[in-house]
Length: 430
Ligand code: SF4
Image (cartoon, rainbow, N blue to C red):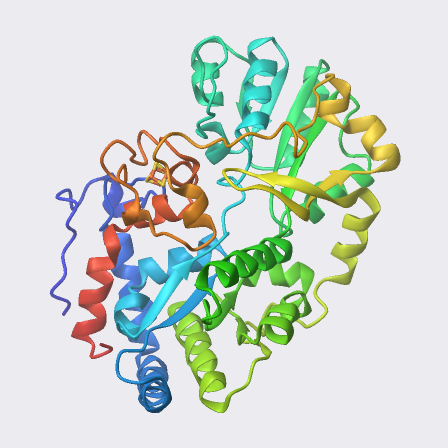
């Protein structure tokens, strides 16, 4: 029997039977224990075998890199960071491997300007539809005392939290007056937006603020920055490429990292053994001196991706240079509505809001917030002086704490994976 008990101090309470994924106050819940134990114990033999490979490859790499080597492996997906923290993967792989969170959260990189505009619209009576994490996203500047859509709603503004554009479209059709949907997301969600718009499921009174970001250009930007900073040393030794995004764009989207930067890339699934296998494959390539893209997440990802989804996205959207919060403009890293769809649905156009340009964009993170560096792998949440002091999931100061997928929120919620580490140790994985 496991020696682990719920550390939330409330076994038998609601959280015991109805796990609440949003509850950061119970970072070590019964749910976490159950999931970690289930996934590790059920697949213990596989995990042990993969761990043995990881140790073997690390031993071989020690011979070429020397005793003090440290390999940097970066992930580009908030859910991978979640898995890594939640399942204690950092502990399982040991301190020779530095697992770095990268740009994996679309909410975190949405410029403050657009949230400020959404707040203004809502306060002025336009109905604003948004996802739950965008609802809490703090803007740099307030409007009539509101610094987030949540605060605006508390002051009586017209804000509705929805779970999809279809949900917003249904409501807006009944509402019949001016409304706007905040279209945040990566490539995973963009086909859903495109399909709804293309199939005319969105009523004319619902405008679309397209804040969709593209992951491959962000990866390239990150690698360029890290390359410059490292002054010639290899800044990243391997990439765990995003599984969800790759279902749409295909594994081919990451080829540039392997071909031009010589970095092994593995498109990974999200269970602990997926991530461990992906790390083992990166190490195997390093041992062999290879750099190529391998799909570990074969149950969902192909080389070409979802061609139908790509087609509908290309019908409705076009790639444009766009601003990332705290970072600035990255070429061709966003999606804007095009042609007839822009004329019919573009929220900025309809409400006469000037779009950001490289000239008008200004640094838009709060003082001392290190989200931008965290986003491109130059810092970790614990490097921020505000982490879990002034900035908590309950009262986020920066965007990486507001979204469930933000690295700061993930690290805050799962408390540095202490419990997962304990379980991994107990079953002999570390
Ligand atoms: S802890 Fe808060 S203030 Fe610090 S980097 Fe994260 S989001 Fe920004």
